[in-house]
Length: 461
Image (tube, rainbow, N blue to C red; front, side, top):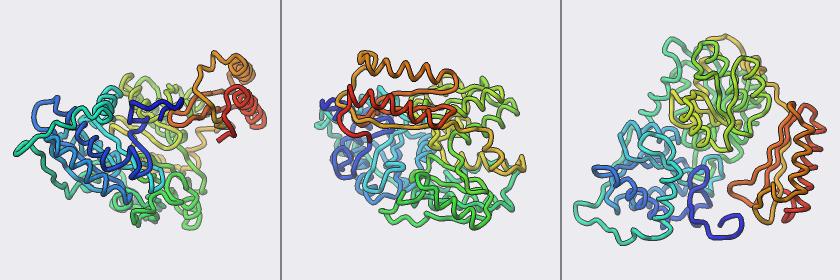
């Protein structure tokens, strides 16, 4: 449903289709129709469509994999099944296999009862909005339900047994051949997800002493008190084992949060700053620009400015970061949450390429991560979610727009106010940053109170 209660005509959100598994739209019936619709769209190209399908480690992945594959074959397409593979691995395999599309069955960092469907184009990038809209229309209108290839026109399914091995060789290219991780002790939490086998293996092959956790997926423990959303275990193990680096991946391994040798978090903003400094010093950062979302801390923007670079901001969502990077010819971008895109290495956020790139910088500079993360001085930030009755243009609600303008004026150039609607829930998100933590909280509540009074539908979320 849309925010105002009207039926939605779009299946896709900002990162594919997502929901509770076996409840619409994440059901085998709808997955089958998605497979058919995707194949119909791919039929616009010459030849028989071929589609890669991979999963993370959720129990419901088996159900949805079978349904999607059945839909593709039913529409005359061929399927490559690759099993549990990180999301960025599907982007790579789609390109490598010259497939027409790649599908990932994953709900990323969500709990195991959720699942989702993300689709990559043949070039390894996420589908454009227009193509997602076309697929949604075909699924929701049932207009192709009666299109039924028969006999030899029905598709077939095959399995790529060495898919993880192919991806493993690919990601190792992110680590320079002349370097090793000999003598480096690394703690890695794979969130009981798609990288549970491959990530520790890559680190070990490069010479690291690896302390792996979250590597025993059972279908129901993906992201369960582990991984990128729960880095506390990695922090503790880094301190206990005297490791130089800790790594926390999410369930589909498209993002990584790092931990320095003192046990402190190194988030996506700090990772972007460290990578940008390295590329700037080597003259390899196009336009001296990093792309990030409006949620990245003001400290990143200031750090880049001080090192002679600049920050270009996009709406929230790694797909918008990638779109801007492609449009402007930029190389490095990402989100505070740890989705980092090195566009010269892969077409989407890749947690393994992220940590390998950062480990290479550490080895070359012979500096501890605790020193490198000091590039970014984090400005105090508060985030308040207010539940609203309906999505109104805030400029038309004068009492709210007046308070927003007042707070923006008070913050001046040493702070930021961001007010935006959630893309998936009836919430207005209020983010305030500034130098004084007490004032930041007060300004946030000032805006939130105005929204509650004039637009609110209950308690803040």
